[in-house]
Image (cartoon, rainbow, N blue to C red; front, side, top):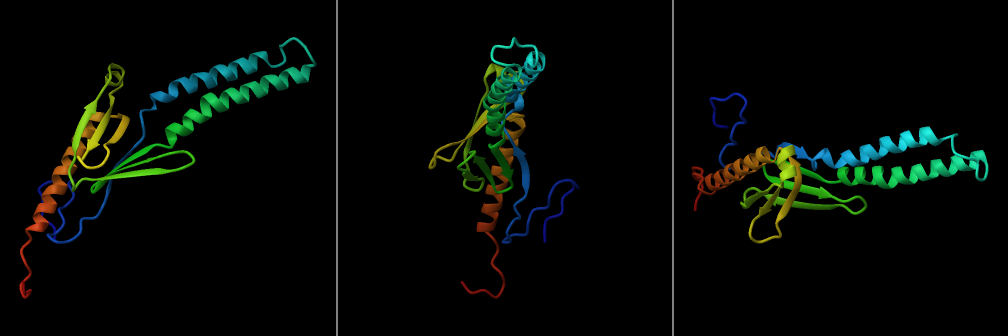
Length: 188
């Protein structure tokens, strides 16, 4: 049985010795301000193609100039809009009640997990621009593995507090389970 709490919105603690279910707390991506420049490039390219289509002097022939214009616009949109969007979309950070998971990569996927129960230090870094937008970067280091960097995440202060709370709760539950009361009838 779980322990009753006075707060109705707070999840109940699992019974001693039972496994705590893993629940997702948040799923994050890097701050979306990285997509401002690609959005401006898309708007400018669309406006330029709309304006120059049919208005360019006929160097070769009318349809050939428009075809070259559309091909150039497609290459610009592909390289400066679609690729940055896919790079932004391919990186996710998932916070659960047991661990932090980083997934990244377009063609080859990379996944890194850091467990709350092992404990880790959290260091926060914010540039002046990140402070303006309320974002920042967190580095999670357990002293053994390479540190996990959560780069340019939004609401960095809230994420920092949430991770600190999850480490504390996980270590309390691990300590409680390691000192559990033996079941009657078991022999040592």
